[in-house]
Image 1 (tube, rainbow, N blue to C red):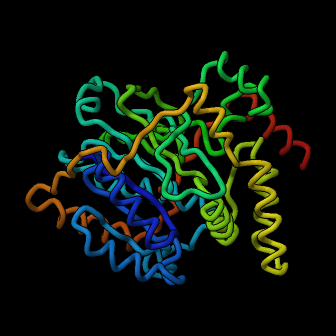
Image 2: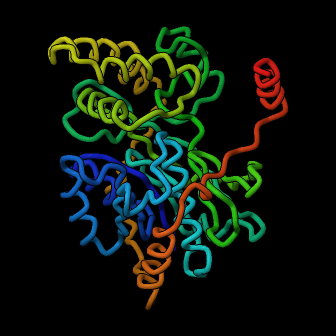
Length: 347
């Protein structure tokens, strides 16, 4: 079976799409952690997910889940939860792959592609496809940007569509994609990578039939909702070129300004940082059309007794401390030297 692990706080409508799209795109079962289970709308999400046969819903209360203290950072909570799921699945042969995805992502996976991964390779890569963003969209977009080669990036820069000829400038969200691991391999998951227990990044299998659809901010309404939610979710890390915009958005979303003033400047930041020149991208044939709800996959049910076995493992791990499930990548030598210099400078 192909499973996903996610930590979410979203509207019931978005969660319904998230579940339906992933299950139609090749996922068999989803483990969904509710990051703020008592906030408005979340009890409704919990009730719907609890009734879904292909979802395991885990509300992460401060007493019921975070028994040794809730980490302040959203990124840390996400990593911990994903690796709890991996540990829970470790003894089960029916758990073939586990992918760590966010609530605004869809794992586009192909069973034949995953069956063809060499036996000695325990990780796969899902490169990102990013949904185009416009302030007003009549429905959820089905056009996506893919990572581009240098020639196309240079063309877009010369045309003034992007500021520099890089995929980091072309994409508004991450360009690293997501990873999946064989749960029995012992590999851990970060937000994007598959790593060993000592933090070493692992080689990942690639296949054009595998990718992750990222609905980073497909509309102005979703852009505002997302950044308002992130402002309340605690510290998070962003890639360096996006950090100033993220900091500005957090400050604006959490300010006590009049609502109309806040809305005006959220729109201005959106136009400056996120709106796509969809007409140009379509003219240049740089977009791919894909509707995950029409992907046609049917999720496979648990084998006999598997649901009960997974529930028992989750309950066992829920009762214990969670900090040990956080695994961080080893820093490259240059970064280790920078850290050392900072520490020496403080002594």
